[in-house]
Length: 329
Image (cartoon, rainbow, N blue to C red; front, top):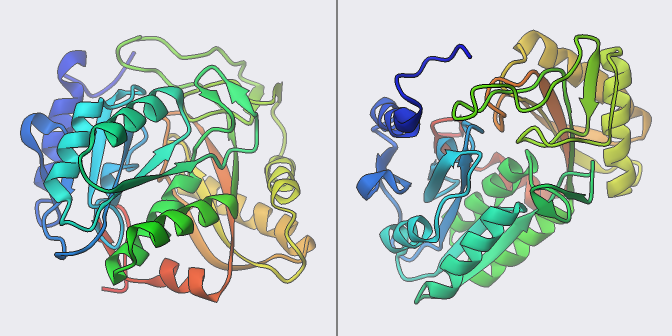
């Protein structure tokens, strides 16, 4: 295992210290690094909080700031944060308007966020993200997994919270955006969790995992490596089948790298995905391309499509200023 680390046990703490130092104008760390929070928030604003295991950077800490999250709780690599972290984050950023949790559908995250919500002595609600169309059940979940579509939910809901929407409206909006979003990914290599010291799974040099999860969970099937156009056709075709989009529907297209794929290849996948979407009559009106929801150093990518109308598009375009997303300011 070759990684830039000192000790496995101190990896997350040292990384969080570096993140907070590099983005000190936007974020600060909570006590004992339990959470990352934005430096400034508006009184009377609903607090939007997310979190999950580390190793998916910049998700979630990289999306803390104006127009997105008020706080994020980082767990150890591929391990859920604890309810105490979530409670501490909520108490730190709540301004009296309530707390909205955005949770990816993984068993550990779901259980711990639910415990925190039940223990929290203030109004709160939860949006569950389950955008992965690859499989209905896996080792980590009951039901569909939450993957790169989480970014889109956090951005749109965060913008609505910034403009002053109340807790009930934000909950309804988050559920609607999740329903309008679908994703599927492909892995060309495994990743190596530092504590394990070896690849999560073995895959041949001429193989790929179609429908892989962001923790390296198996997808739909292991197949021989093929062309980018054929990969995009399968991923995007599964998304289109799931969303049942009408011709003329406007959409956001996110092509997301898993950590080990160069931008050269990700932009090629944009071209490949657009061929499929245009063939189906879907109008892509906004793009986001890059490694935003990663799986350590895994090579591969995911494609996410979100159906939008004018109000949702306005929220996507609204100003955002975080470590990983910045526009309009």
